[in-house]
Image 1: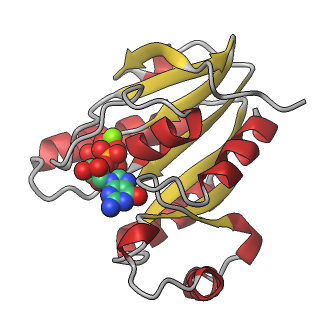
Image 2 (image 1 turned 90 degrees about the vertical axis):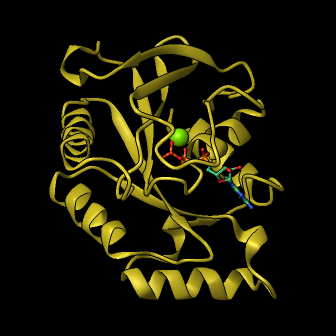
Length: 193
Ligand SMILES: Nc1nc2c(ncn2[C@@H]2O[C@H](COP(=O)(O)OP(=O)(O)OP(=O)(O)O)[C@@H](O)[C@H]2O)c(=O)[nH]1
Ligand SMILES: [Mg+2]
């Protein structure tokens, strides 16, 4: 069975992951601040303003949960690595993200979004290592491909796979702006949920 994402609506927002109920199934989106987590969620659900997006990094400050169908969750997490946030706030976000991910029985995958123009950063590697260590499945989304001149999707996928030392099949190259490649994520999320 594949879950359709077109009727996704906002469910709840929380900064206390330990108080969240369990879901039937869920997927979460993580990544550095401003890489387009909220934009990708809007794109896969084909909705403009489901998740709040912003030009200013640090927009999403809580765990925001959306649901395409009762008990099935799409989870937008705050971004990591935003320099302008105080150390205290950074560490509280880190704790919130880690507590959330480790507390979920039915999490099917974490999508780690990286910036197509910047490429994977040290923080992204740390995140990958961490989700591996806690035994949660992950996939990589390379977003903002519209900003890459002379885009060669096959090469981008190969280079990213090599760079991160992971299987090519775990990588999606997309643009939340133009919607290029977004259907593949919609399908993948629908299948996982
Ligand atoms: N060119 C381009 N811009 C994008 C794309 N996706 C997102 N953006 C822009 O990037 C900025 C950040 O997008 P968000 O979706 O708010 O990013 P986020 O990762 O949720 O950010 P935080 O919640 O602050 O961590 C916005 O100005 C978006 O319009 C894309 O595919 N291409
Ligand atoms: Mg966001």
